[in-house]
Image (cartoon, rainbow, N blue to C red; front, side, top):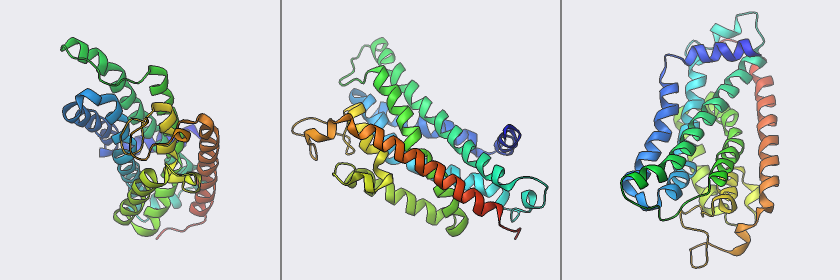
Length: 253
């Protein structure tokens, strides 16, 4: 399997994909710094998982598929290799990129208070380092299933339609369904829902406290953590396995 992973990394080495993995979180960090410096840590995370991350995942998933898709997949289908492993390697490469980008968001949040102190300011609302790290770990887990999901959609509908569909589902579910009791029905809401007790931030960017719109005390319960993580893992494994089998049965176009 390691050989397939190395091959996928070689394919994307000189493309825009690795640069996008750096630029997407850096853009989020810069926006938070210049537009909401007093609440940097809140907006850095909130803007990442509610707006930038869904776009980012959709785009890199499409770009990963385009590398072989441009040649009708003949470059891999005609070779004596395991197509299931090719697909899984693409998915894992996407997860790797997701992890790297989320780590940059985490480092930005950790370093910001230091930078703010040096330039003579204070942080209006901070997030404990352990909570910030847990949040990044949970975001990787709860968003990873969208990689095979977007790869399949990209194969069927193209990257433009996939971008609209997946981003719309993230925005509507992440903002509207995440604060409802039926949040678990919509997997696109898991990341935003689990961030409420971990970061004390509502999907709309407000602090999860009395007086904030859409807030209710039950949203701060940590009981949602295990179900959200377990369902996300099952979704990821299930979608990866089913899509890998489908990909292995295809023919070059």
